[in-house]
Length: 193
Ligand SMILES: [Fe+2]
Ligand SMILES: [Fe+2]
Image (cartoon, rainbow, N blue to C red; front, side):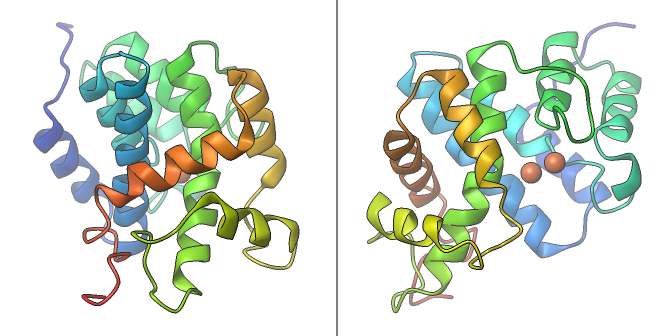
């Protein structure tokens, strides 16, 4: 089959075809924005990084029991290149896939997936309910409170940062900066929420 990389808009349409849950769509948008930010920062193809981030949880609403595996199947059926499929499924390494993140792109996705959840939860308990005026300090404070956003796996984030060789504080700042670029779309723009 001919390889087929969807444009950003086609990818977003595909995500919406499989997901109606607004929180999942916002999660995809947040991960896309942070991937784009990190890709750009490294001088890489930020469009590719963004598209992979946007689609990474494609199957989660319809096939939570087959997470990663269904996405792999759907993307392969649509002729997505191996590099993209591999990167997408590597985010579930050790949880729902045995594909270990190897490239900087894959390691970044692995590290920031859970982190965007912690940034979102932290923003929502701030008076401004916004990421726009937020720094890594707020997230670090919440990091230590294990009952806060208890579903966020801090170990995965730490491991991802280690694999990347990036300081955790820097990674948190990158996540916040990336999410600022889509603050309105992900409901973290403050007043407009
Ligand atoms: Fe996932
Ligand atoms: Fe995710």
